[in-house]
Image (cartoon, rainbow, N blue to C red; front, top):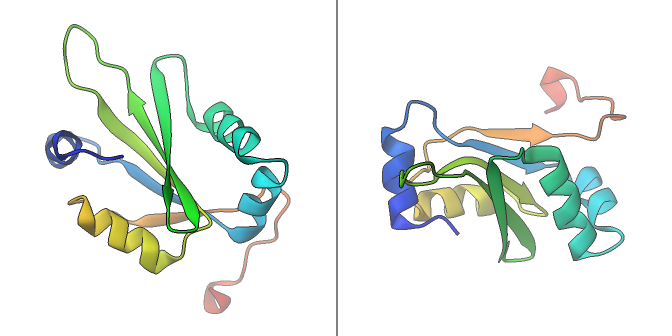
Length: 121
């Protein structure tokens, strides 16, 4: 969950968190074998050694929050918000509720996907 403290950090850090929305095909593939395997796959794809990840349910989906680990008492800051099985409206509402509604949302496709043409999106 993004806390009030995270909102303040997001507004004042030089790089705002990246917001990623998994397309349905990717979410379904990653979650097909269970929630724990989904969470492990997201952690493997988005976390490095100095980062931590938490997951929370949001309506029918999940938001995974990746934070950079604090050094010498500095606050942790959110670097990635990864949404799975959420509509754009649900994502935007969650971002607005946590004070970061201005952030762009990037779609994440499976590596084997053919991307839609600009006019199809």
